[in-house]
Image 1 (cartoon, helix red, strand yellow):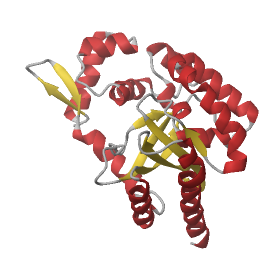
Image 2 (tube, one colour; image 1 turned 180 degrees about the vertical axis):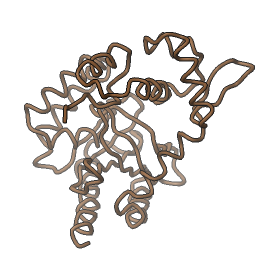
Image 3 (cartoon, helix red, strand yellow; image 1 turned 135 degrees about the vertical axis):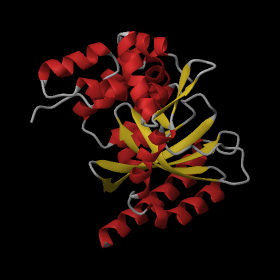
Length: 274
């Protein structure tokens, strides 16, 4: 079977054509519809047909037909007054089976919540997808001011502690290829994260966790651990984030990081006992 670029990397008509040239059985029409839905991942506001067409490099009549079909199936909603499309509720239903079948999340939630309360932050689980991590569960300090990362939220791998833990487990050659793409496609993320990446790659084998000292620019510090728990082809990644005014680098290294390692080791053992 021929190998393809993952679908979430197909962002324009040019990308799509390259895949179709390699594989005549690849469904271009289906891919175009999914490309429209993917526009909402990083830009969740309402979009006009003309915006989809310009961003994706698709003809406006094609976009119009696809949007009408997606609307009919509930994946898009249309506001007649604005003449713009919103993401529809059917898109949310597709994510539910993925989250509800996630290994051990129900059993781990009390321990995650306890850690979030202990450090007055948020403990999250995610998976890697292309250049991003996707959050699939979060527990937050209920009386804190740290916003709970929503299920389905995406953050760049290079600028998150859980993403860096995932990268740290790859070989040097694998990381080189990934980082070259990240630098080319997301130069701002890569630039502000480069020093933190170097630290994580060199120290992860010793510490057992990666750190983020606020590289995302939101005043949030975090530690991340890659577990050995697999869901399909992806490993679950764990993250503990705290506001910068409540913690510092020493806290990450001496208490928060080791606590997250302990939580992930417990999760790994539970899976091995099943």
